[in-house]
Length: 635
Ligand code: AMP
Image (cartoon, rainbow, N blue to C red; front, side):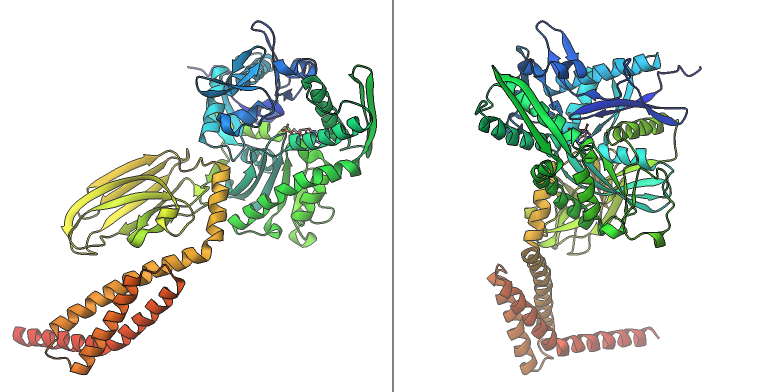
């Protein structure tokens, strides 16, 4: 049976906050599928008319000022969110207990609004190709959580797409920039500042494989914030020149915000621009001149917010800026000269190493440069869709020289003796991955082992998050004699498969956990910050638990030896050992909440070690005698 052209194609879709695009790899070359009017980007704007008619894109944007209550912008910000955390920019309501957007006299779920955009892209793709297409890879910000990814997938399905993969935007962008043009072992940073989201991802290309080594970002930070700040600045100017003193009227505030955005875009190529708003209200006309310098003052605090994410990602990957070969810019907002300047400064980009002008010239020798190159060679708004198309081509089998890997946002492990977290897969490990360890029983006669699966960066189990738990039964064994192998396998879809096996009997239990990779960015950030904040206390707690386990074992062993060798021990040795055992036991009973307890315990243990040396010597002597006697008996 022959291949039906078109049916097997997998297009790539960048479902952006501000703009969306669809692309396809044809004959090995990725390209944007433009509209019949030649538009490459589709504004992510949906207008609901009276009745059931809907318009999307440029048409919806044109009517935005006149019909703001019927028009939805930045719907991506609402995807997969509940009422509580949605930003209050449009009229929000509820439908079936879920957050809904009120527009055109009806309520719409965010995925239904996104589906309108995706439906338009489908018609656009089919129009451009002249054949039906069904399968798509859709991109999302790296920090979208599970609910947000699911909502994106549902939106695709509502629009009639078969969603083959939900792909991280920076990974897609790196694919578009990097495919086969980078030398092996390149290290890249993808700085993606779009309309509503920011991500910084660090990737490494090795043997044709892209590995995401770290990602950090903010799902509510982008060019829209600059528009809003500039809109606020304009509102003050408008009020000062006799215009309306508040922006309560949606039509007026929308016009101001659109003028702010247009001025911001114009100032990426000009050093000053005019803002003209005729008939803003009744007979009031507004006019002013805005300079790039003034805009940069307004925008700087917003762009500065991205810096901490860059730092954190570098520290997570254990890299410094100078380890990087390239910094790739993605997202429309990176066209702003200030963004380019600051990114070049933060990443210590080599002077004159901005290329775009010297497109494709990646062969500069290491000796020629001092820092990474700032790569602006791709259209920042198109790179994500092109990369998604490349991923689509890989999935459909028409391209197969690259593989994509993601990383774990937080460490995964199990609870072990003394309530400590035992990490099996550390944070930022490339997935898919597998790790295992042997565990044993803590007490004599124990019949089962509790496998408590944890996620987080803290030393104590109770400070991390529980992902699941189960028990594995085994035959009663003396303390330390049971052997249970625990294996974690994190697959390419982010599912964590936990397996525990009694190595003696082969009995095993399994558990699959869905939520190991898709964790909300704010929660990841909070967990990492807490682990830094409590690092010293956590470290003390771990050392206390480990020392107290050693203490308990040593005290029990000393008491047992005392009992066995009562008759042979000189009284002086016996009483010294008893005293030091009691000292260890009394520090252990005190608890360990105080950092000083650890020092007391360590010194009591040291004393016990010293005092039990004659005891240990005697035990060895006794064992030797016994051995020799047995050997003699055998001869
Ligand atoms: P994206 O989400 O990647 O489509 O990026 C959209 C954001 O980029 C919006 O905030 C736009 O205002 C902004 N943008 C697009 N073009 C430019 C430009 N030439 N200069 C500055 N910002 C721009």
